[in-house]
Length: 389
Image (tube, rainbow, N blue to C red):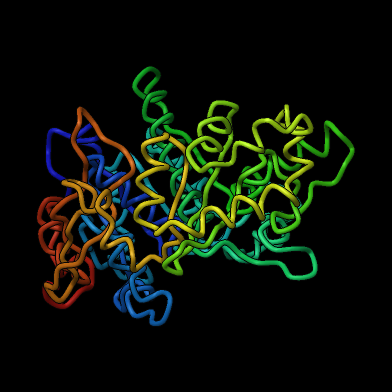
């Protein structure tokens, strides 16, 4: 559980979710100080046992939570759940519509029983023709046009992370914080629905509005028209690759002077940024030829001094050696269910100069069941469980 003294200290969240979107929401709330109780079935959240790309999902997105096992198929388990929800500020779930109704946890049931409860449902779609459909991150990337913009329509390419699931959890946090603020004024709960598809739609809104305003279909990123003359990947003398973005008039001037490209500055056909964009086919080979004389270290130092945007082409594993990532607070350490420490990026924010979430534990299945039941004045017998987890 996150420590006290944080913005959401004193807020209790009951979470019934799995995979990425719902757990991301709960994880962020926990790092902001909320007490997040993850209610799992007797067999546990299935995400606990994922392999391959999903091997880190449970540990990453469930740090800082308490785990409670309840068998909601039994009346005693449902009674304990209701008792728990009486003490909660937020109920967080990400099941398909109707799945929780058989357990007495539909939105209508909860609003009738707990009128001050904030109910946050992370779904595939918001209300409408598709609301009944299940969804996955890759599905909504294909539907929304994001995959066709990242690749092409002929060869669509999903973003290389669970970007929409994670961002959907973030929108859940935003909505929950707004609901908590509203409840502080009127005492009433709120029913929130977060849509994975609509989240992805929000990501492609810039391209939709571009089309709305111009009537011209936006080009996919591999085919896009560039907004700046130097905005590309270049090879260095030591065989490395570096992205360089020269995006302002001042940058253009200092870049050309630093690298001895004075002929580009004096060319009357290259007076404006628009001129240079149309001249990219002849500018880029000259820039590439000049850049290739520099090692990646020397080139990076010069671009840094000139305040010009640049970046090496990293892979995720490379970031464990990046000096900015390794700065104090750049990575936080957590402990998995086997007691093994692992590092992960801190939340991308600082509060009064401090980062959040260091030293959190990933909960063992049911580790907090007995303690939470005792807090509620219950015991294992009343929930139909045999012994403490």
